[in-house]
Image 1 (spheres, rainbow, N blue to C red):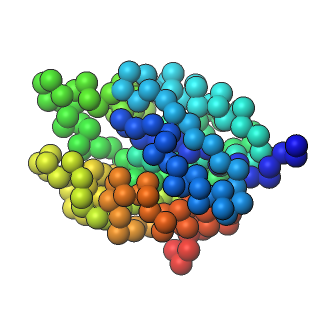
Image 2 (tube, rainbow, N blue to C red; image 1 turned 90 degrees about the vertical axis):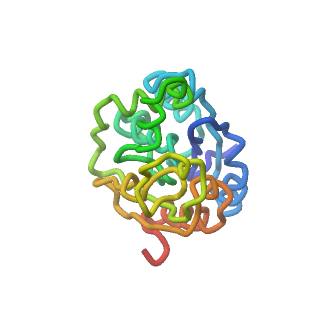
Length: 211
């Protein structure tokens, strides 16, 4: 069996499982990519442990180049894997609603008695730690949502515009090559054909459509 030219590893967010990426897996496969879904314990697992497991998963992935696509917290894991140069084959990265510049919702919940545990160890480790130093050659694309539907609306102080969980300003990553907004919610990104089209285009070309 020949080695696929381009593989994609999908990394889910907080409270989720790799199954949430089934739609994107289907669409990206239809676009010619070899696609795998990575699952990890976002609540009980620490950031370092989960990144280490992701790095091993990437190394086991067959492909001449391996791209990463992360939703929310999964995008932060992807950035850590890139910063640690988990594999020499690592290619482009697409972040879907990832709170690269901090998370008002996570900080608020972490500071609320009886609710800190639902933020999980991985996110709390990210909030407490130093931001990863990313290789200048890596091409990163950020997709942010502006449809404010989600549990984040119940938390006072979430800046506008937002995707219902993450504020637009929180998705800013200075090292990103491109940053676009779509009228989708945080969870809606997982079933958004528009997100999948933009993701595939960036992975192929290093640019979003009409960015």
